[in-house]
Image 1 (cartoon, rainbow, N blue to C red):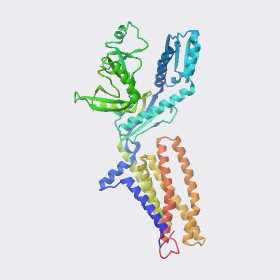
Image 2 (spheres, rainbow, N blue to C red):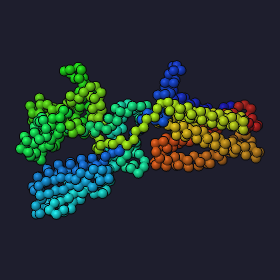
Image 3 (cartoon, one colour):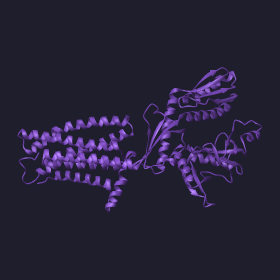
Image 4 (cartoon, helix red, strand yellow):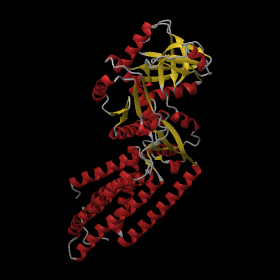
Length: 535
């Protein structure tokens, strides 16, 4: 009689099998839908699907210079508030990545009697900067630990922003990661499966999308010289000159009213006045909405300019108080409006990007890789099944069933987790087959030893599984530890191999120890228990 406990075990195996089948092909109604669901659930990597491979270098010196400019603006306000006299505050201009941490700010014109007040201000409010005397001037340099932290933060923010932009384009199978090598601190690897012409994506990724709203203090002017002439050749500390889209220039406030960092959402839409034109709407955060409302409410009928990446894209008079939302027009077609909205939602890049490498893998090469991998896996599987059936006879059927279920669980896990299958991943699948066979060989040989020692069939199976268990767990754990190290320190391809192998090993513990044993016990549960075992 089949025991109730054995029935429950069989139901567990059936439930796992059905869950795996559902994860791979869903609930199809036709053969074509099976193929479609399989293609949608199993995501292929760049080497299998074809696509683009981009290597970019972050120009971290831009982030350091931007931080120094922000500090200079704050310093002017703080020194004025504390009545510390100042002649000028300027920074140096690091031109390369290697020079980024050498960023320095020079403060001139501070009376010697107020040097102590300035030092106290720097100590209290600018803790990441060291101040030293440089003749009659004072020099601020960034502390090494804070410079290193800023480099890492810049890289992390850049990768997060790029990932948001890529996901916004619907390229969910793409990957963004730090590149290994000598310049790994500043280099990013982006893989775009299925993208054969990455021109638009490159433009979106490279666009900083630094959006700023400024009070217009003069313009438009035909040239920079004309703008300076309107101010008698001297710009105040609170003013700056920015170029327009068609060559004109504007004098605007140095500090923006709100920036792209204040934007909560952005969407493209057709213009209400002209159905052939597109524009981009934006929604501000709560804090920014209050600031924007206060500014526009006190500057009605005065001009305000919108700058994108340091270029004025539109300037118009404020007609009424604007709070939490607005519209940017004069952009272009639908794609331009959509790209701007995507960039605004993703946020601005903290530094510029330079493309170091671009490589395209054709889909035909990916198809060849899949075909070769499938042939290799199929040939190995057939050879393993043949050997197991010939050498272990009836018990070999248990090993074959466990092997097939192992592969099914592995593929289903990749589907459920949304993992990307690469060519090294296929190698991991093939190696998993070998590990699964090894586990079954260990168990079967232990059972044979028990049978040769004169034990009964049931006792031999019980002792065989018990003695092989610790060895199987030990070999699997050591391999999983190795895979963890490969995942932590390896490249994308190596990580794919490690993930696939770990999933296969965990599945193998279930199939070799649990499923195979249940099959043996099921065979022994009949009315007439066999006196011998086909092994």
